[in-house]
Image (cartoon, rainbow, N blue to C red; front, top):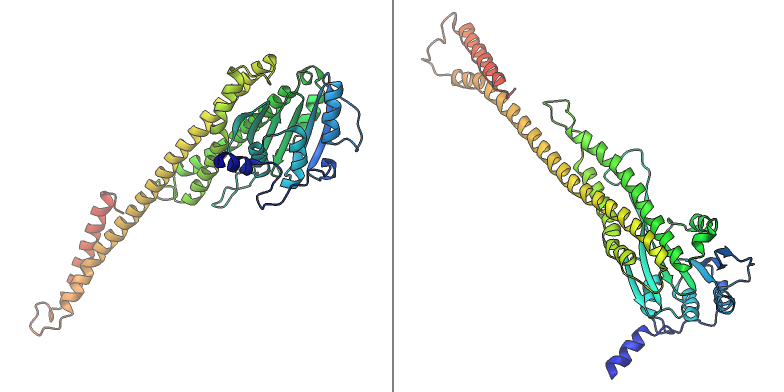
Length: 369
């Protein structure tokens, strides 16, 4: 019995983690986190003014019909508590929505679907470096109910304002209710993945070309920094963490009948799932290709080092001949042959030059020089 009491206390929406009470009496309109609040009926946004709040919106919807769409950006626990209490959101979903860095997922709490999407934005750059940021990530949490839709956005990217305007221009689709908004956001996020994948393909092609292009010496590329390839691989892994966990939720939305998803809208989720699967295949291919490029670059660096060592060894072998001759005749023995011979010096120098040239020619023929 105490275990059940502890679980209820852990997820009770009226208490913060620090033990303080949420301000549930505070109007959500006073919160700067609410970026848009609207009521839609028959696919048309009803006229409203700044006095419309999430509380008045849901009351109007439940009195006259339609659905409410509330958008929030990075709300605090206190700011979101009033909205959560008014719409009856599950405390576990509320906690995930307030605290960012959630894994993409789809969960059902009573009569509410809770979906988490990772948004990806490609960061433009003139040249890829070892510290270049290629992608920026954000999050969009969606609460889908029978007569409401709530979005909680984290991060500077992934604004939904343009998407809302496009939906408002299509009343027939918007008339399908909150599930139409959920599909549009999923489609919007996946379309962003496709654009990022195409842009990253160009970066990978540039690195691949640079690695496998002939270098200035010996046909080995020497200008590619492995840290650049590794940084690009890290960005691809960040991309992969956004795409891979979303495959299962999209499959569920496209295949499993759900009471909160209009059957006509469910057909559109299949298209989103197909696009997501294609992006996932691209990202997996990127990861494998970068592994191959990194290994090839390291192998080329090893080959270049071996080539340099062979050249150093070759010149050391050539220099060893005059070194040996000078060492022998520098011992200052009194009875050494050729010391008093008139042609001794030019003969030794000539023999030394001939030996050095012979060694040089042999090594060059064998590809060491």
